Length: 512
Image (tube, rainbow, N blue to C red):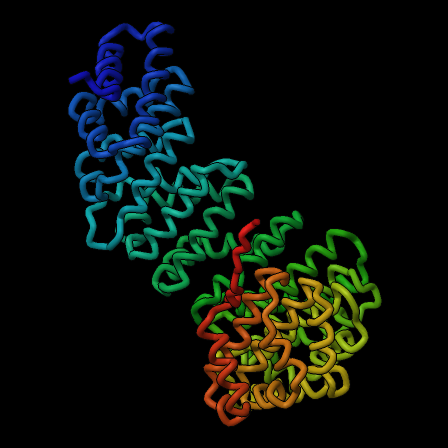
């Protein structure tokens, strides 16, 4: 029986490894490892895997990662990664601890990425680990440019924090020194660190207190007053994530962050520069995302930091394609997607009234933006009720001067994909409300449209059409709102799925 090709190739690699590293040998190794990579992918994997490791130990592979040839390093790293796939984290830690630390400090990003991927196999706090890894992983965040290695390092650190490894293994004295060294560098690496810090403290007040005592939280808060607009914008982006618990929220509030950001929004009215507009956009998004921050009471927050009048003013800007106008419309929808925040908007009135005014006079893309915001507001809950649902009804009654569903149905039936999808999304949210279901059932044109399949419509539109019908059928009030025949058709549509096509009979004609 002839020798298998992968066996021949492995023997060739072994011979080359025993030779002096001349340019010809390096070239031969590169080609042989490229072939081995293909053979591992082609399989049978276990056979090639066992044959490889029976002849080429991991120590030999790791030594090749120090070779003076970039192409060889990349190829060997790829093969090593394939061979490590079935190896569990405890085995990696037990067998390769020395190589892990060397790999994290390796100058080539491909090798760093290879080692960093292994940490993602660590699945629970009880898994074996070493505090020596910590500073080396943090150092992988270094650099102005984003690379696979920096992305993986951030992912690894976040993952290890999520499973409870931070205090025991990632925050030694040496690790903290590495963190502070990174924070003394460029803004890219600083914000990689801040991203990990934000992810770490969202579920741990003790970690927040640790970072606060080390001065890291205060360093982060100073970024909000940076003269570099991109730095300030990155800070604004991070603030809502920091407020997943009341402890960091209260510290941030005491530091005057929200007061300062709201002042930035006010001051921007008299400054038409690009920098000012960018900061204003970021500030608006910050305030809108605070609706979902778990560490606050949205109603209390928005009453204290009254953003609604600012949003109303921007929603009513005359330029229909203004970034500020579109962002403000989106922010009204985002804030209104939280029931407590929606009650604030209703009590304050200006922002919701502005949305109604713009929707009633809008066309084209601006109308789509308004519909998306309205869908967010109507969809604040999968089981809406009480005050917030009543607010939605009052908003509905004002849209198109009480003829919202009639106008919306016409908009959907025009067939333009974006407006059709946006309109169907609104109707799907309407169907969640008892009053909304009644409105749908009372307007035969929309019911007829929903029950009419049309394969020429975009798939996303067909999916939303199906989502509307699913919501209708699942509603407790549906049977009482629709007559028996219509409800049976809705149920059948829901059973058949979004893309069901009626089979047509084919008749074969024999030629004479």
